[in-house]
Image 1: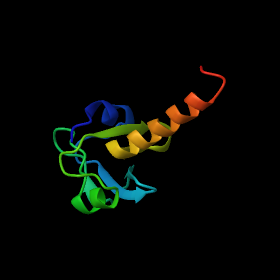
Image 2: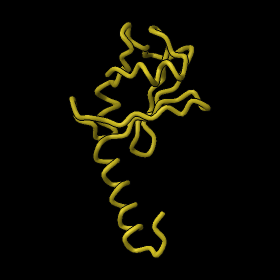
Image 3: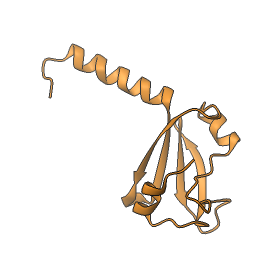
Length: 100
């Protein structure tokens, strides 16, 4: 997975060490001096199969990446998680009196 624009914002260069954890259905990629993973030579972010399985991300499935620059993190959301969040928001908007 290539994410050069996010990596640039975080200042993560190829070889930068990373820790990858699942948290509440998303993958959290954090800078870690002793991390088991690293940014690839062409800006690839590793998404190990074991971590993807924990978050129900199928191989080849599109994901949404979000950089939390102030926290030195990238969060990886599965498409199904994004769909659930949007469905909840749309249900709230449809039932509410104030829109925007």
